[in-house]
Length: 443
Image 1 (tube, rainbow, N blue to C red):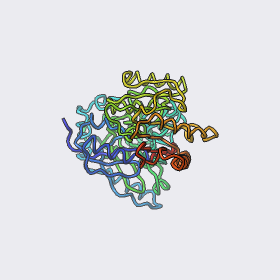
Image 2: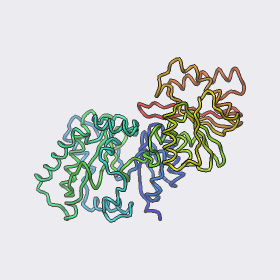
Image 3: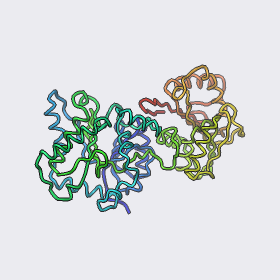
Image 4: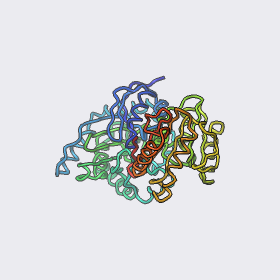
């Protein structure tokens, strides 16, 4: 049963916004879709179970407010007053917000019903900040999610690990000193946390910690809520930049990009899904990733388009072992075949695949060295296994993309049947280039 129509926004890796916009329209029947850098706003009547199926987004929020950017001045007090005014509402407003949020999850206010995922606050903080502390960076490295903050590069969370004790004490002391009584007894037991991201001009005047602390104190005085920075009932997110001021509540504690069926993460799942979507995989198609690594592209493709057949090859035993574990965890043993082979000599018949999808590591995981000289051989082998009318989708660094252009131009000059930019009748090549530092994606 569909929920009442709601307004949402979802964060996305830079360059993935068009993919996300298309997906919310196709998967959720979304309307009023609006793309900005790092975010897609939309309206839909879809239930949370359907919203959770989004594959190209990072974090999903219930949109509370969206305004023009705040005026920046040298007066910090005035700016903080303007920011707090976004939250000063009649008590019924926040009661209605909480009611809507709970209704979306079909619960009666029980935290365990709302947050059914791992409530670890460390993971949550690592998702929301690229100015994390050493402990957070360790957590990110352990989960291999280096692009977690791709939606708002340069922004930070209000409570990094080394500020937690100070921030929590400040908020709780403010609550005691305010002398304000709770509106109802239930609100005394309701805990919350404010997280803030700010970038652009406002970040040069105020820090995320200053903004989050001021908003938190204001909400405690107004609503009688209790601050809990470690395990709150509710998180309120404030995003401030030069484009807009946005207030929202995350629908799910973990990012949409955290796939429960991937045991060991490799390529970012959102990027892998976007690459597979470009291949336009149809039922009965044969798809190859000749440099499959841990198999993320194949996993995303097989989950979304299960009626195709998938093959992955790699020269690394450890990568193939990891891919095999991922495939078994996802229950896709009957969909994906693995083999140990060099990308320069794949032991598979010519013209046997409808699509080749691969993350070319040169310029990202590996530096571009003399080994790049094998790139023409790699491309030639990909073309060999492709059927007439097949599609190649490649993820490239910016430097490698430039080199690829020169290689394909030379190839077109030497051979009329070479891989082209998509105008060839034999092969469609879609080259994607990604800057891993800023998590961009384009083609």
